[in-house]
Image (tube, rainbow, N blue to C red; front, side, top):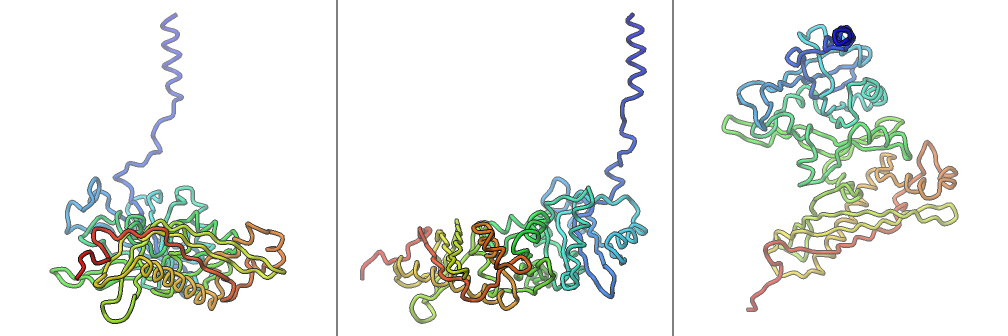
Length: 386
């Protein structure tokens, strides 16, 4: 009886699935980043293949002289066509499951090819929705070869791991594929991408060095590319999202060279209320934040003066960015969505192509509430009387 059972079990083992279709890790190339361009009716794709053997289990490459990545370039009538063309020159199988970020050129955005890119990213089963998305005006091949400061691992770069530096200075909130798809499919069908460029202001003992810089925002809608806002013109976006972790305001209290003060701000909370009067819609905005450190003080000032200056500068930046976005016909703060959530019937009456018409007067009031000021390790008031 036992022999019969043993024979049956041995026969059944032949039906068990094996690992015959598994590719050995050393026989694959791991794609870390993509760049997608569009020129002369063709997609131009750039594939950054990373060498995990050089950076595995370390924040810094084992051999600083070794190349961390190589860039492949190909063209095609479709995105997929360009990748199949690139496969002709690849020695091993390319694995897509480790893609961390993708950079879209301005030409791709201007040519209204973003939907095709998203279709490619969401259709292919190895792709993840956590892939970070950026826009740029720079040559993609130059961006993808920039290594992090001190030759840190590419997996820890500003583009591959944006949340690390975002915790210290939250200029533009990183966006992934999931949030991009949601933003383009819900009112006002508009989103902004971090706009990246190459910063050549770094120096090493060997000469000039390069780093990646967040330059501003690239404005997208389901209708196409709207344009971009850079530097100070984009400052308002960080005060209009609860995702902002930390940023700064520099203001002037009084007159003279020693009258400037820089304040680090955290714990931002934003509340937007649509105000409807006879089908005329305006918005009241309340921004709560905490001043966690006050820097650059060289004279006696009061808490009230600091609070007043913060409120003035934050409101100024919010309004200036909104004004610049209105000039590009963009609802950068997604105010249309606020009305959609509150009164969908009124929104249906007023909307056109998924958003309501906005003017500079659409923001009625901005109330900035600095609910706490922490001076840090020093004191911004004189403690010794003369």
